Length: 257
Length: 188
Image 1 (cartoon, each protein chain N blue to C red):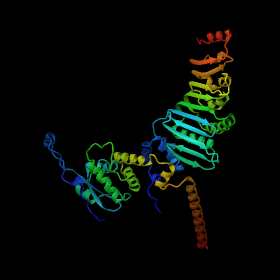
Image 2: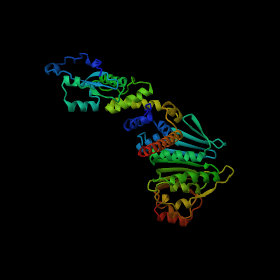
Image 3: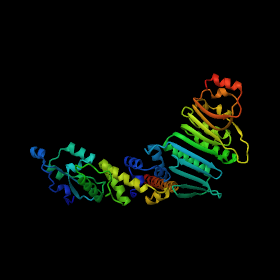
Image 4: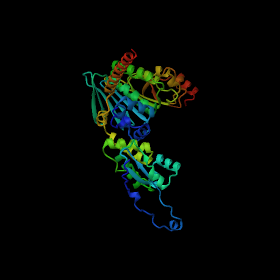
């Protein structure tokens, strides 16, 4: 029987684990893409690379930028308008033929969670730069993949940039409500709308994730229909579109002041 | 077995400097053991140098060989190439009784040699040298794209791997069918 020359795949488990311990995040992400054996090995052993605390997603009409630890590492998934995805990381690009950039990103992100685990300090998401129709399609793919996972994402702080509260609902549902303590939302106004719009968050308030929340920061003018819904918050910063004497009484009742 | 005994640096008389305590203590002669690899070339190594290898150290402690017995029974490591064993022996001699430095720049640069060394060092359980080797492999991976890693280490893509597996299964199936037919022929 022919013995293959020694390579990364023929190295025993103990030294291979040591090798991955000395690899940085970029190397681990690249090794996962080499072949299924290395991918399975990394996902099973979960190398002790420095724990990633912050993730960021900027979703554009034709690209997704995935940032790790405040741009320590950035991955870019771009639609080349010819049915291919151009993936870039660390000034290196690769064309993935006949692929959808939503799907490539979603699969990569799930793979990232496989070895990194689901726990993070902060996840920033800007969903305001994609058209509503495309965003709906993207969220279907992205959230569907995350729903298949055993564990929900455990994140403490979620800053969001949105066009509408509806866009955040599916995302919020894949987050572990016991971990999510703070939400910050900035509603992006279209530049053509000169007048400042007021926004609703009533559907967010119905979610389990809202009920366990401790801090809320809203940078836009918000319509609050029932101020009792703010009662459980330890800290809340917001501008309301309208408030009545009755609302103020309610706020006093729920010990907000 | 050809016994081309190779004296190593540790075999040279390297007595400790005459410190006041050692002058008072009775001198214990250093014991030596013998190892050989696939090429059967025997290396004489001091017990002090071999302490780096948890595997050999354990063997020595359990056997309690005399000098003559050790010489007559070199430890055979048939799974390790001669040149790789030589590297290991040299490293153990160089670092005998010394604290190991944080980096080791004398490791082989050729990837095949480095992988062989990793396998040997892992088998011989030489913790510090394994750490250096693993660091070196990690450095070789750093900054490389998946395609470059695949190319450097001749790792097939998933698609190529699946195709090769299918081919192997097909071949095995054909061989099995051939054997069954031959067995049926024999039975007749």
